[in-house]
Image 1 (cartoon, rainbow, N blue to C red):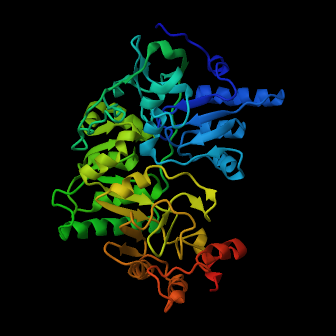
Image 2 (cartoon, rainbow, N blue to C red):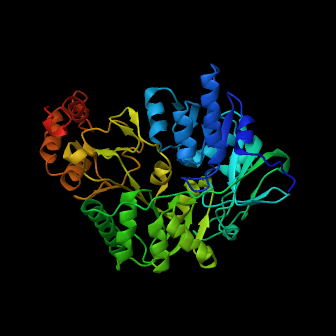
Length: 495
């Protein structure tokens, strides 16, 4: 090997205060661990000795406890983008300590290449192999590493021996050209491969190779409960009805589904929906349930950006990797989320919401309009360009004290112009072709929890006789949120 081997501490010592660091991976899959953990220790030592130490951190999306959690706890982050899911990082963002800028995932790569976000000093890459020509075999997640490695001044490689290099060939790494030289991205079916099975970097930029051995430790999802099961059934019913009405072609269309317990429940219900033919996925992240769908022949192909699998299911995939290579491809999220491809393939997009208002605006990111949860991620990439755009959520939270259907969303990530369908465990609201008042009546009747419907109807009628296209009462728009902050229960709202 032509590269310099270092310990994690030695590699972390190369990184100075003020540096901009990028990392590989998408979720815990493909995300480095040991150098960032050592960097957090370095930050704590620097702070203890009275010296400033903060970096800027660009990631694929959410990471693992050794990146976001460790660095946030060490107070080592100045700027952070584009998506996160760590309690300590979230706390730092909401306190104002960390300058977080939330971005649609599909534009991260091009923003970096265009120079909009400044220079990148280091890219830390989790690799299963690297040869002298700079060809890197990635593991279970790609994220934005194709761009980050291209734009970084220096590269640190974590060579992880815990996973099998036979995964080579699962990846399809392609970076669009920069305007005015950009051409169409030649993906016409989810299974089309257009790029390289390896990440190619400049060997001269690789300043350290750190040998390590670790597993991602992704936990299986919680058991499906009655609410998520009903949500899943409602989604399956909606898709079946669209198919039977001829609004989805008989061969069906590729699906995109978000990440988490609710999305996992939906995929489980699609496993049982015999009326829906075998289908393909064109999505961001593959969860355990997708592997079951592939094994059963329900999912014939899955294009994604990451294998966010529990260790048990990951080992199952690796034990039969030649079979799964025929059914799975992993891409950078600039491609997995690209509006051009979403529109061309006719993706049916299904994403989760924190809350939706009665006019069809969706909040995916902010609790009570101010506190960042995780980030917008790729939901709006798909929603704005989908063949059908669906948002899902339970109708209530916090034991019923919070209604997910509110008079007006406290923050808007996907506007009424991008949201076609809202589904809760209560039912389905089809918003296509409806005016604001018609949308409000449809959402209240079909998606709101029965205990909140009278209040929502009362709000809707506050503007009766006062004219206007949208019956929005500015004075009372956030009454649900204000009441929750005051009494802890939206049911107590008074208009």
